[in-house]
Image 1 (cartoon, rainbow, N blue to C red):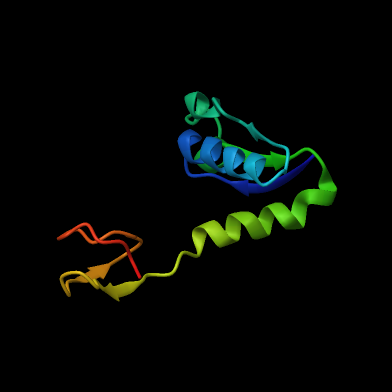
Image 2: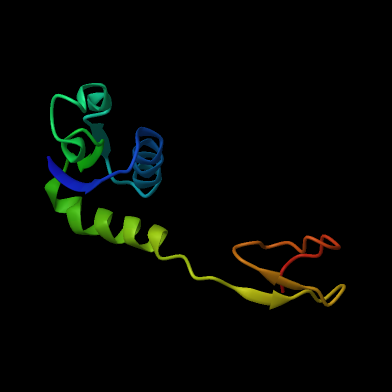
Length: 100
């Protein structure tokens, strides 16, 4: 096993493990409940971590998670109403038309 990344919280760690599983990479959450002893140990040592079970999948797991955290901010003009749509939305908030 090898640690891939430290997560800011248990929910994020669980989502990342699920995403890696969908990519065919077996991963687990370690230190899932260590936040309960954060006063006894340094706070950064109590954060959950994502670990891959097969060390050969380590680099692939890092690239999958890097692609997730490097989302591009998009701007597009709706073909239906001409409204400018920002962010990751794939549907116009004004008229409901799909992104071209």
